[in-house]
Length: 133
Image 1 (tube, rainbow, N blue to C red):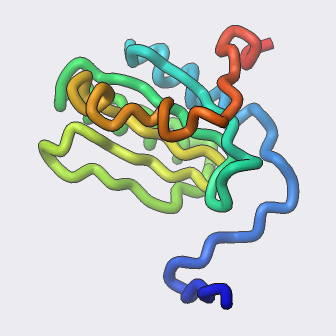
Image 2 (image 1 turned 120 degrees about the vertical axis):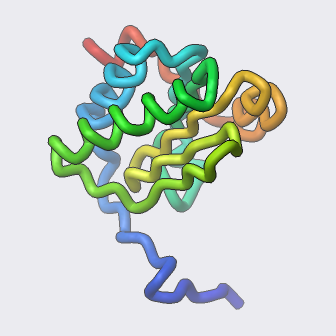
């Protein structure tokens, strides 16, 4: 028997893959703020909660915070619906959930520790230069 989600945790039903415009915007914001080791994984066929994972590294906690603040500012300007942000102070890992795109920002130590690319090794990694074209 399948567990039912409560209204509190329910996510909108995805009808179509999102346009890459939002994804491109997120990548541009992170690149402009000097995020390191930026990767985009297409997990749409593997995940029931998101289509894309964006993984990036900040060089310190203040850098992670700056990445998050700028990302939230630009998403707000675009009127993108942010479902949640997990930014526990000092954790070295920030998650910004924009429904079809989930952004994970790590310190270098946590990027190495959690190795999200290995967890999602069956995902297709998108070549970043192609996102802009």
